[in-house]
Each structure stands twice: as structure tokens, then as C-alpha cells.
Image (cartoon, rainbow, N blue to C red; front, side, top):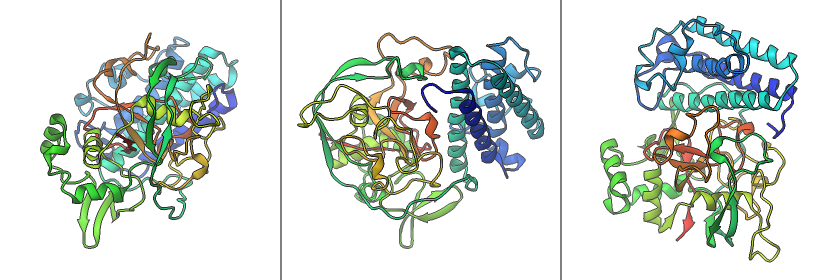
Length: 432
């Protein structure tokens, strides 16, 4: 999505988001649509209704004051008011009725968008609700992986051939840097606001994320059994989780295997390690004599360019690592187009100015930074998006193979608690 979308683009993006939602629940039975009561998932039947409710809440009701199309919708789908653990116990409508509610909201929002002049205020809320659905479709995909459901049938799956590893670091000169989004960037979330000066010391960052082969060396060296590589919180989590390797790994007859949805397959050696939490990333770094980048370092390596002599930064920042042109399949593994993570050396057209590859797409990347507000933070209308989570989560950057490309840019901040190893997250490292 461009920084200044038009009506046709918003309609296209809204349709694409909804088609992805429907594809991700297609073929699931009634039991699968509710799923087990776990702290890291929602019942899918509740969550798709919540997505529709969010469109209705912020456009039809907030902007126009219309009544809800479903009686007691707030009592069913308001995630700010309904605790996670009780969502399985709600008197949810059946799947067919839920789909009818979703379609009714969709039709009303699309008609409003098509018939009215597009104001900046309305454009903000259309983008907010489309991006919200995009984030949930990524969560739906993660949920299907967590629960070992069959792989979803998503359009356009075509992975490139073997590309191999991409070793070594690149130097970044550091200096004074404007971290965060600029005021002319178009739609951004409240936690990206606004750019502010920070000082970053010179550093060296890996050209690519840590691969499965590199991470397997840590596992094979007893990394999950050696307490010296874990901080106290990480070790307590590992003991409680009883892990000896990443959550979806097992040893097969010929080596490590990885579960992808409901199927086990040989571990691809040069794809990035995925489904590891922040604690695991930190333990690997201690073993390897490395560290995670701060989010300022990550954004500098992704968005800045070196001066001709390589000793300083040019003043302008890029919207994407490769420049200001929107992502294509040649730049980044986004939009679920490849069906999963690909080799870290693939897609050289997406390199940042410093030579870092795949900083957008493939896997989310943990940083060493705690999720905190930028100076002068003020919550946007959806107040529960960022503010409740400051100080309790770690920052991830860059998106994954599942993330819609319209939702991704260099200043975008994701945030999860450090034990979360269900998400499509890996990491790249920096030299000490």
C-alpha cells in the first residue's frame, strides 16, 4: 500500500485481506475452528468474527455512528474487554452466521468507500482496519502451524531454487541517526512516532539471519543443556518448556527434521532458523560470541546508506532496504508467495545499501531491545495497540514470509514476550 492510497487501491487491499482470511479457515471442521484452549492461540471462529467487528467498530460505527449488524457484538468480539481465556466460553454464532456477519460488514464498508470522497481521516481508518486484518491472517497461519493443521492453500506459492548461505558481516559506521517514522511517511502505527535523534556507535552486523545449519551446531553442542549460555529467566523458561532443540525440530534417521504444519521434512540447512524465541536467540549469541542488534542498529542497517567513503551515513532514510519502490517478489519473501522461509542468500535485489539481505520478509528478526515508547508518545485512537505492552515485550523487525507486503516498511515495530517461539521469528547477529 502506498503512503497515500486511493479508493481503488483500498478496495483492492480490503478484498485481498478478506480472501486471505477466508482461505485460512477453508477446509477446517467445527472442532478445528474452535481448537484447544491455549494461551498463544484464539479460537478461530471467534477471531474471524473479531476481524469483521473491528472493521465495523472503526468505520461504520466510529465514523458514521451506525448500529452494529450483530446484536451484542461488543460482548462477543471486543478484544480489549473480553479476557483471552473466556473466548472459548462465549455464546458465539455458528460458522455460517459468522461468515454472513463478516460479509455484511464487508459489503457495507466497501459501499461506503466506493460512494464517498476519500478524506485523510477516513483513509487512516480504512488502512488501520485492513492492516489489522493482515496481522490476524498472519496469526491464523501461525495458529495452523501451532496446532499441526494442514498447510493452507494460498495462491502464488513458488519458491526459488537453492541459494545457499550468506556468511560474513558488513560494517556500519554509526553516528547520529533519526530512529522512527517521519511525519510525511503516510500511515504508520503509534509506536513508530516520531523520528528522533539517537547516537549509534559503529558496529558490524551479519549480512543474513542465522541459518538452520548454524543453529543446529549450537543445538548439537549441547546448547539447550548448558546453563552458562542462558540468563536466569531464559533458563527457567527452557526448563519449564523441557526443550532440547527448537519447538518444531526432531531427530530423524538422517538428521534434524522440522515440522511444517502437519508434515515433517528434512531441515533445510541454509534457510533461516525459525520458531525460536528471544531467550533462544540470546543463548545462541552467547554460545557464538555474538549479540543481537539493537532496534536502532537494525533500522540503521536497513534504512540508511553509507557516504561514498563509507565512513559516515547519508542523511536520507529509505522506506525499504532497497529504496523507496514497493516490494516485489524479487525483493522480499512476503505475501506467503513462497510457501515458507527460503535460503538466506536468495533475493539479492532486496539488499540494503550496506549489503544486508532479507531484512524484510522470510522471518521476523528479534532485536536486543525492549519494546518502549518513543519520546513524546501519544496513543492513536486504537489505544490498546501499543500502550499496554510497553516494557514487557521485545522488539522484532522486518516481517516474515507470511506478512502482507503492504504492511511492511523499515520503521515497522513488532513486539512479543521473550518466550514466544510459535511465531515466524528468527534473528541475525552483530559482532561484539
